[in-house]
Length: 196
Length: 196
Image (cartoon, rainbow over all chains, first blue to last red; front, top):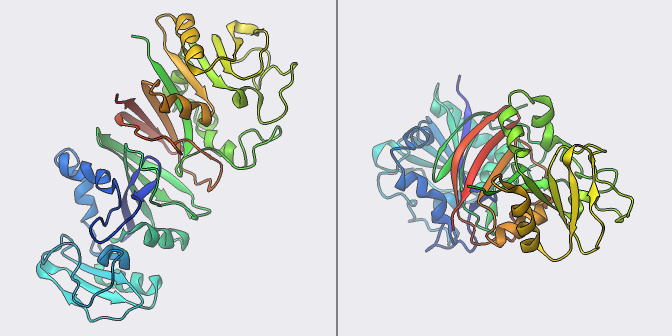
């Protein structure tokens, strides 16, 4: 059955990005260290990496699409002309904008009427496939707090960032059950079922 | 070779205890949920539980021994007359006190001259066995920051406490490598080697 999933990499102290995010440093200070496992150990982490991009539709926050800088009408995302999603991506924003069709099947659709609307559109687009909440941390928190995520897949990097944006700050009453653990020298993967 | 180890259970948001610790609620609000895995799944987590009590000597902070209440000369710890350690336990404190010999091989020795002194005494007592930093979070942080821990074994409970004492707050420059992961429905065990 189609699920709502979320993959997120966090530091051991719970940060999904480092401090002082900017257009030139979108992951914040030290934030790129979170993702070493994806690049330096891509083979060993193939299953986890493929899982991140297996959904039939994606939802992301405005900051994940455009970064902390000024929203520009000509901005086309961080991923070049052929983004890795190859599926519809719904971007939460308050500023209406025409859909943006990229190469390879990725279309960014801008949703101004909230997370439930984005989820309904994404579910329809995904069909029998999963809907993935792609990030960032604030968007994931919104979906978690609303009880809309079925499976949270955390990728815990063995680093301490000390500051930045914490995934779970302010998320109350979250009941989780770990269902699978695995890992390498650069990451620990934990798959959690969200208990309703 | 003898190592300095540390086992600590933390919530998914990084807390080693809940908020508002007191003599009647030494783990803080919600803190007892951290340790469900030890009591409700004792068989499934037998290896991890045995690892916690395999050391030849232990070091703990004053608050772990006596709680947040008034230090009383007649206080004999939280563990009854036959504590589970069955080995020398060195308690960090500023108040001198005579050693306290309990049943079953546990002796609490009160160390007033700092963590290095406690570690030296514990190493001598442990011989070829490991020295374990038993807690609480503040004491673990001191040893981590001083680079004195070889292996950190985190037991991550799938709960969000939201407040309390965070293990890794203020610990900078910590380099870790996960070497083993396992778990059950109530806990994820991750063994980290501290990289020097």
